[in-house]
Length: 120
Image (cartoon, rainbow, N blue to C red; front, side, top):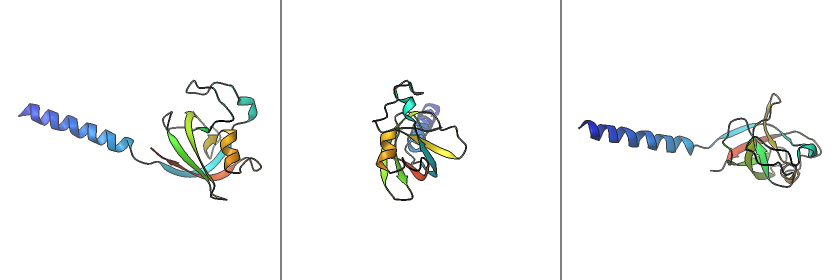
């Protein structure tokens, strides 16, 4: 009987971990974008920053996470892949690439209020 209980407990733990990892993350806050001088520099994941790709930096989300970033002023959205850590400026929730910032019309303002939602 103890083996059966151990197996049930193991499957319960695995199931709970799968459920937790599939929870959606949503937050609102300020977004900024990477300056051109970072183009070609290594990110925290080891990938080189490319201003023309749709990537971003988040403090906690795992590398490879796909997130939808919505500019709350105009409702324009873009999907980026998290490949870096940051932002480290207080109050900011995400840094996105230049191409992603262009897509949601935030270049002129520099920083905008956004909603960040995980997709997977």
